[in-house]
Length: 442
Image: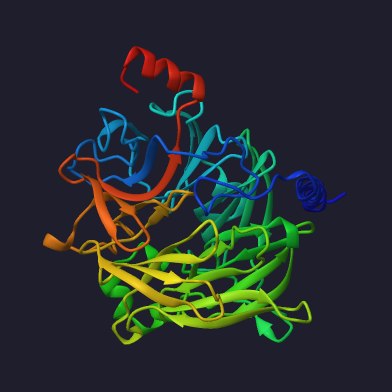
């Protein structure tokens, strides 16, 4: 049997098993894989921030920064730990393994992958493994999305070793850090839509056996100054404009959707009675809905507008509420956080907005929707300069009407770097009780 066929068969078996055995989708962050265990059902204790190193600032290294996020703690809102990885590789995104004990984090420039133990003591993560063979094993570079599968990690990438362009693929590793398989993003035409081969985010709906991927740009664009990219018509033509629907069991692309303007983060509706997904396009400032029609055929449809597209607000991260009735959207260029009512996903309505920084990128919310966290950095060469180069983690309380500041960490002042992606963890129940009894530091 061909190695790729064998890998695909194993992927099919794992996927089939979890479609049957996976618990109801419930998670502490609404963007996590439905295959994760050990979920936080109450207050998160820590926010882990994957942070880009800045030359001359602290040790200048990319690092995992841990912030105490429990209001009952005497260290609330403070940095309690950081783990440097020795170098700057354009730290970007992270993802938990299925058992939630380990956090995988990647660099978009050097393509190194770092595995942190966050299960043993979430207050003090440990770097336990560094994976360096992604380019050699797969021909792919720029690991972006880390998505838990049973015993494995599905990695969405942005580029390739051949020309550093946007044509890329998906890589699969087992939880031990061994390469398993590669799947190319489609460039052929499927049902009248030609694939562009670009990649970005990954999101799965096990009930529908539906894996969605989105598209952005290759190394040649994201590791170039934003002003240069905008001023270069050839570079501006090198952004993705498709989404792909994959058969998760076979890992074959079954449908391609034309979604112009670089569709980024994908969020499946977490509510168990809903089977649709939503994304935002960075360059055209639109919301798109991916949903089955009355005949059961999947369709991608533009359903909303974010800000004034003519001013290119640049929608970046989005976060859907646990009941799928609301959506947070951050726009980088105007530093605005918006909330959309998704009661009717066919017609999202903006009901709230707040200027949250000179630049704002990632947004994460607690499962109960009462706490919202924001970070500032997009890419090292795309962040703003001068006074607009704010680098922060900002936490807010949300009462359904207004965001109220809870705490803030100034990453420049703390000499930590540029904060990007966030993940939550909590203390094990027994350790929490012991800590409370002894009034010890976390």
